[in-house]
Amino acid sequence: MTIQYLTNEQGECTAVQISIRDWEKIQKDLEMLEDIRAYQEAVEEGLEFVPFEQAFDSTKENNE
Image (cartoon, rainbow, N blue to C red):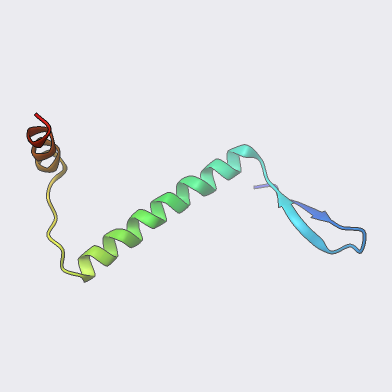
């Protein structure tokens, strides 16, 4: 990952610049991390999990 630092007239770092490709990877990784955290919280709260297909079928039936 290439990072470019942007500075002001006093030489203080004010921003960073990365490629779109790197930014998209960071966003994808953050989204995955949010999903993992949400799953961990659900497990800690003792929530019941439903398989995707069962949840999808249930939602489909309710919309018909």
